[in-house]
Image 1 (tube, one colour):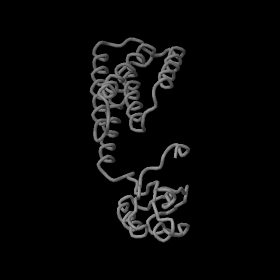
Image 2 (cartoon, one colour):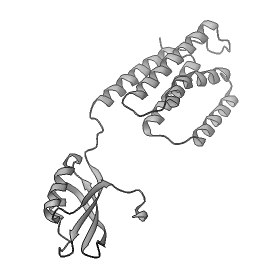
Image 3 (tube, rainbow, N blue to C red):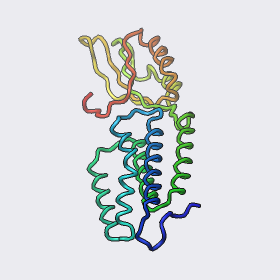
Image 4 (tube, rainbow, N blue to C red):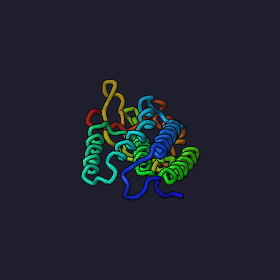
Length: 224
């Protein structure tokens, strides 16, 4: 059932076999594109590429069938395309490899195998995307707190941080408003992102309701 459509050792491909492989590559390529679009930010050009890629890979594999040297040259060409392209996210890379796998399998005639494989992968991905699997509760956040100059800041918020964060470290201290206020910058590893408002409310009581900024940690710390 999961064997190749092509006769082993024969370089001839009948028109019926070719049409079956091409149709399978197009249908499965569309399946990859649809799954990629599910609950994801994407561009039209990228999903079109996902749909067309299996047919393109399939045509190349059929042309080099049985020729090891040409096959190695094709792999080299794929490597050049990979390294010249802009790096994408994990989901984009997964979809690209899936599309290429479909092209490789249909190009070798393993239509039944790749059809079963793609259906299993599609169902698995849909189930994963619809559940909370992989959702991260912890988060690294940058916290900026403004306090009056008369407050002793070293251990001022330690008890609050211990309640809401796994770790905390004071990154910098600077004066503002002609030296009448201090701005403290911390980096926290929060225990639960859903508790951010509660954390801010607790700090507001301690710093006299002065400005508080909680956000993502800057990539380039030198710019701060």
